[in-house]
Image 1 (tube, rainbow, N blue to C red):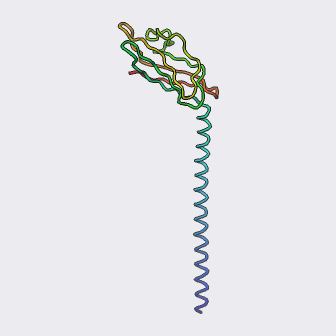
Image 2 (cartoon, rainbow, N blue to C red):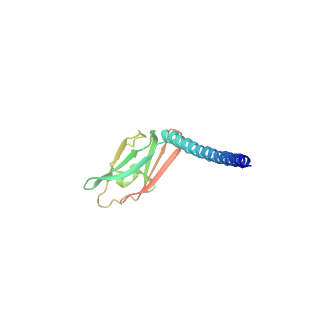
Image 3 (cartoon, rainbow, N blue to C red):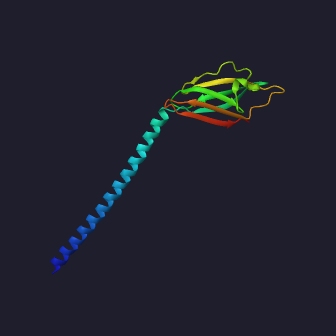
Length: 148
């Protein structure tokens, strides 16, 4: 009789171990699927960033009355057909853009372009800068920022 109880207890322990193992296996599989989804999303994001350009804008004071608007490409692809507008007007037509002779049409990755801005008496300061460009995917990109 004791042998029968020991056998039954052994079977119960074996079944409990089997069920616990199946649960652990299922949780491990779910976790692997989540890690795989995260890794695939990371790779997709890296591919997207590899063909996109990201323009950043900052203002640098050069000397009294003259500042420089610096356009930098922090993306991994060149920004093509770059155009800049000051307060809704093309930069070269704006009074503060009177020193701008030629706007570069391409800004390479990790490169900057400096545009001289004229601020003297009677010239309104630039409030909003809008930059548009086309990246390697052919997408029209645009960013807008306010200058202090």
